[in-house]
Image (cartoon, rainbow, N blue to C red; front, side, top):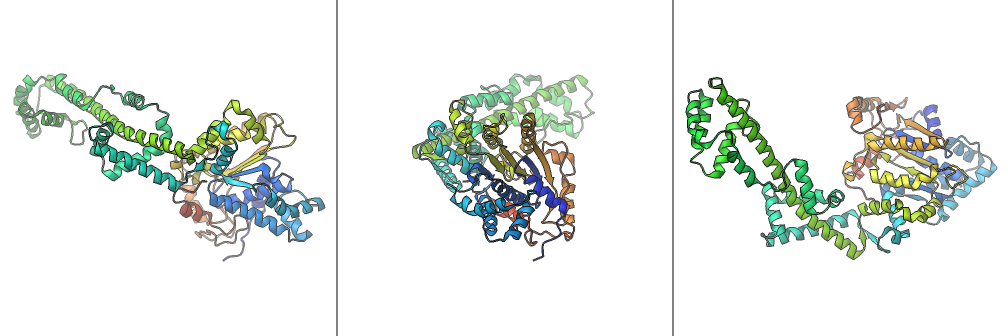
Length: 554
């Protein structure tokens, strides 16, 4: 364990600036730069500024992060109750630029009890927990069961696994039915386990599937996007290989004789043409394709060699190759559509049963919480819901904001719209405070939208400046966890504008990662450093170990 390192005054001053409760702030914070510290510091400064605890909403990404943040706030407030005046004054000055006085010291000593006595406690919670509270408060307006229960990840997975198994077994028992035919078509292209994995992935995208309309409409749209007619099938396309051929079957023997005069490659082609007529239909198609395409199904660079001097014949063969390759692409598109149709048939069946089962048992899953809450907040007929929420939230803080999805950002926008609407229905300033880093977004499979981080910053900046409200954007660059060599490696990766653009919509690129003056070269601190700004807990370990599976979001 090392003693606390040298923290530049500029870093401390920057942390105090973004923790100023009087202004909205947006913070881009590099890994290990003390994101949790400034969030906790801002919550405490809001309380020191006289904000009622129930008026603060702090949204975190996991329940563990929420518990950690709440604990750090309460630990600090509890410690303040034991400090003498000089010690308390020092603690307050470290967190804010406001000079402590007798009244502020008295308030600081009451904050611990005040936070404990707040009905429901400090609102430090995941977005899903907040949505759960909201829907329980307004079940009628949100069109949900009054006493719904939330499916956690394990229950959600177990229910879908059972319903999927039931559907697959029904399909196997009735091979001539709709499910049976779909299962047979799908199993041709994939092994049992692979297909079940594909079904799971399709179900995870149920929002896209269910909004595509009914199955027939979805397949018609898919056919259109693939450039094929809904009536197309493999048999119809295979028939066109010969019915629309630019080289009639009667010409095959003569063509074979001409090619037999060439070199070895031409002789092989002659043999293929000569044997076509005697072949069964299925083999004939495969052999005909070999004349014009490679084994991988790509066009042959040369159908015949330069030994064949008949330019008219060569031109005809090239035009036929173009036609054959176009048909081959069409057949692939139809095969893709048919496999998708099989998948959709099964996925629709599973999803319909899943929705019915949730409705029957009064259940909502995590995606439902977001969708229902967003619909509620966007419902113009529920204006009084906004009014009641407006009376309950004055300050919104967002941890790990780079992992916020587009729908979750819409919820945040609904919650904060009144903050910049005239006087905001309040005679005092109301603030928003997101902290994040697009480079650390690792939850795209949960619809995390890191590019929205910069987009939303510009949106909220416009909203604030348009009504004359202060809005600051700051970057936390110093790492309390890593040495120069590690940080330089990260900078090298994201130095490329192409790499930066893959995760951020900010054209300016990313700020450099800076080490503390006494950081050891290449030493990953990961909690071994006694870090007064980010705590001993290793956030790197949290994001890459504790969060290695789908995090608990309730």
